[in-house]
Image 1 (cartoon, rainbow over the protein chains, first blue to last red):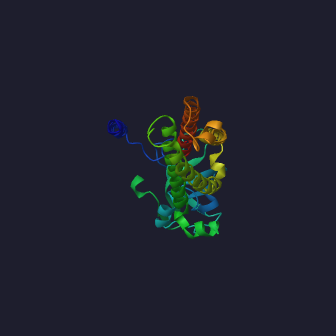
Image 2 (cartoon, chains in turn green, orange):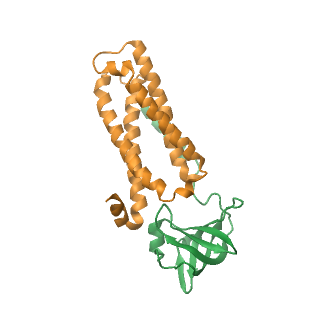
Image 3 (cartoon, rainbow over the protein chains, first blue to last red):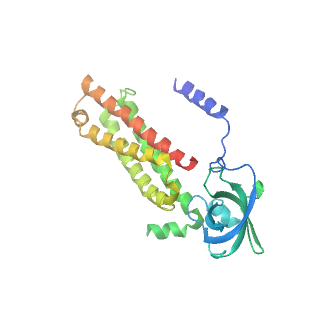
Length: 120
Length: 150
């Protein structure tokens, strides 16, 4: 009985479609570029690294990779100062009025940070 | 000291705190499930008094771990969670689950199980508490897991 139940549950779960990790769901398929000034530098706290930039008077939340991955890509806290001009590339939120981008690449001057090279 | 420790973990701190949270929930729910399933009528040959002590202690330890890791996880970026409907399901569900624990533990049936066999009526009362317990904890865990997917 227990074994039958476990086997059924296991089969059901395996037949379900493989869901992607959260975050890229409510984003545009399209990859776009934005250039703006840093309002809040890179933070490596939380489930994902983040920063805030201002693009044409709009404040954008820049969501990066998980902290360890962002750091491996060379993106450390304090490297990009507030006020610096950066270009970010990624998938913007599809939610109207929500200025957020899941970001795969950051360029600051000559420095380039490919946090999700496989998505570029 | 806890703050210093988590900072020393650097980029891994969130992951490690999250790990503690999962371990806490595993302990909490694993222990609760065993006790609740027994109260619902399984493994009647095992005396309830034998099961109730270890499962309650383990659940308490698990709850403590989950709370201690949950507070830093929610405070690190608390504004991100504004408007997340799953939080509004999770915390009331935890409150109801704790209220249920309190009500069951002060019930005459629960007091009696340590010293004598329960009457059929008392067993049914505790089985009702056990089903509420499963409902509330599963709701809290499900809503909690979904927070990051909103």
